Structures are given as C-alpha cells and as structure tokens.
Image 1 (tube, rainbow, N blue to C red):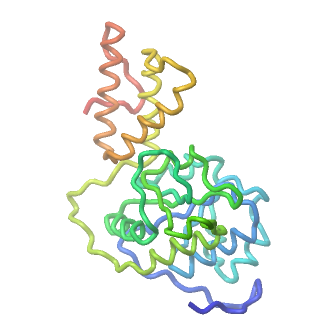
Image 2: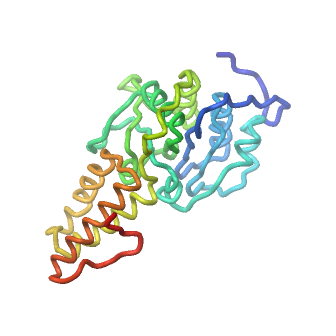
Image 3: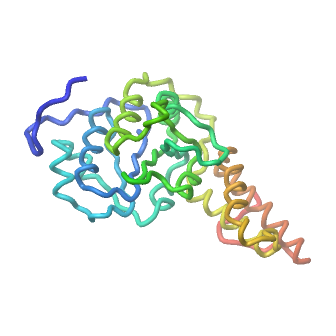
Length: 272
C-alpha cells in the first residue's frame, strides 16, 4: 500500500467505489471528537469503496472544515454525511449491525475478525440487506449500550498487550477487508431479509413494557442486564418483518390474557 505525501486539500482524484449488487454498509462514527479524524476516516472509506458515513453527536459540530481538509478529496463522503442524536436512530433503517471493539464485553454475540465480517457484509449487500458498522470515540471506544444494539462484534487479532488503533486506522482495517472480498452471487428472491432495527426496537419496547406491567423484573438493579440478555436472544434470531409482527401479536395476546380480557391492541402490533 502506497501512502501519498499529499497535503490537506491537495487536488487528488477521489477513487470510485466498485459496483455492488446491493447497498454497501454504512459506517457510523459515534461521538467522534476531532474533525481531522472524521476526515481521515472518510478518506479511508472511499479508498476502499465505501461512501456512506453517519455521525452521532460529533463533539466539534458539523460541518467541519478540518474534516474536509483531512479527507483529501473524499468530498463525496463528506458531502453525504448525515447526523443523528443517538445510535438507535442512526441504525434504524439497517437490518444488520456490526460493532467494532477491542475489549470483551460479556455480551453473548458472534465475534468475527474484520476479514470474516467483510465476507458476511458482502453477502448481506448481495442480498439487498442494509447493514452498518459502528465505531466508537477515539478515547474510549463503544459503550456497552452501543455494542448491545449490534448483532455481531468485530475484533481485530492484534497484539493483546497493545491493541489500540486510532479511528481512521480502525475504519481502514474494516473497509480494506470489505474491498478485498469478491462480489458474491445474489441469493434467490424467496429469502426474506431481517427486519430493520426500527421495527426490532419497537418489538423490544412492546415486550419490555408488558414485562414491566407483569412485574417480571423483580430487581431494578438487575433490570438492565436482563433487558440486554432478552434483546441479545432476539438479535441472534434476526427475525424477519413478518416474524416481528407475529411476535408483537403473541405479546399482545399474552398481555390480554393476563388482564383477563380481550388482547390489547398496540400501534404496529399485528397477529398475522
């Protein structure tokens, strides 16, 4: 790999992403601190054919002149940035989410190397399944709450005594592996993709509301860990949109029986 000696804003021609049978993954930077790091990450993305960048609460605000300068010509990424107030909103339209972290979190989730994750991401793109990769802030990485929103964890096999990467390095590592995976054949049209995260989060809220009403969570201190465990089960199942509707209907029917009457109807909850 050859690194140029270009200066910020030098007239370098931005590379064009290779064609893809489906949507390339979205890169989501959560609480990024420096515009220079955002720009370097954008440059790394476009080097490898990724151009959709989302930012959650950038510390120094947006737009950022320093980010554009550090992007060194990756203007299509910078110009296409979208902002979000929280991680859940940033991934609401994604059906699969990958979280990058160097630390074990005690969460029961599949753990892949960047190379393994890239192969899975290519398969998702070929199937038309929208996916996102989460990267945490420079100083601390992703929070446990953000990792809990993901289906899969990406961990690079680095020196265990010194495994920290800066933000752009981490983005480049994942993006480069994505760029090396050949485009797979698209699967048959009969395969239904997983529901997006907005629908899955709606199911979580419905289920957790009913569990609260039934006083399932006996200890307020243990509730957060129990909620994470329940959500992890549903994340692993990767239910389709139809299956999410069915689960809404099951929860509604059970809550109605608990109350001794007809099942209560909720917006978006169906029995079909």
